[in-house]
Image 1 (cartoon, helix red, strand yellow):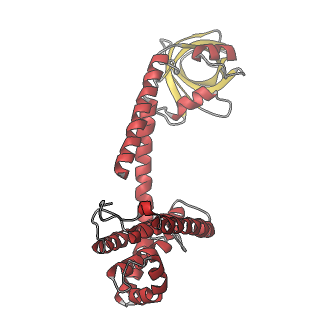
Image 2 (cartoon, helix red, strand yellow):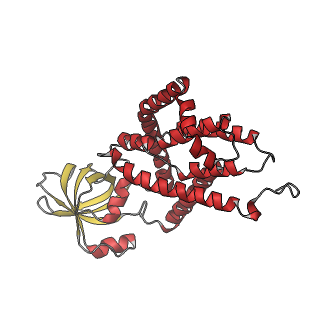
Image 3 (spheres, helix red, strand yellow):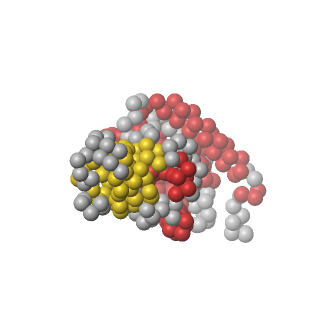
Length: 326
């Protein structure tokens, strides 16, 4: 079921991205292929109006707003830029965004092929005099299908992050799984089952004390309390399998199953090992700071779940009726 939910979310994201990109193609917020007339003020005198030149692009706020159809730019634009001009008056430009760069250009630079820089063509340029300024017509590189690019990039980045986190979890998972296996082989699980028998008997009165389901339940809860959710999963499945053997009505959850599920859903925990490992792998300065809040939150959730389970079990509506088959 969870896979279908993730698939649904991905499909919705793709549809939203495509719709947004189609809207951008229609409205053309980045003015793809449209010439923007700017003034270029060279920082150094030049002998011939060709070659590589550094200086400033200048245009007033109204001109900028009118070109992009916005009202956000309130100051005149003065952007450092580098031009490379050929003898025929054409060439290309490049500039790096800084604090003074308009927000529209900063947004465009995020998706530029030069990563943080904006590039484009100089369609024409007219110089006044070597020590003066020039008028130029520039066209930025095209920006299309940005949302689809963002979705694709995010998918790749999070896939890489997932691998990085998974590798970071190998050590701690191997440690705790090994300890649990040693405890099982040494008979500690059976001993723990006997010690916890008074508690398990009250929580699961329908399950015999020596039944294999009790051992699987204890191991599952122990793994969850240590924060080893991945290790707890197979134990939880084993517990449900054993509980189902005691089920008089196949396909219907018993009281023990419901209570066990409530405990699992509550996430009773003492050491959130997996969460700590994930935080450590992600570079957290204090990965263990969540221990206290995790214990409190999970404890409250578990108590609420068990109480709800026990209360609902007593109501006639939720009792198994053999005659009606429910």
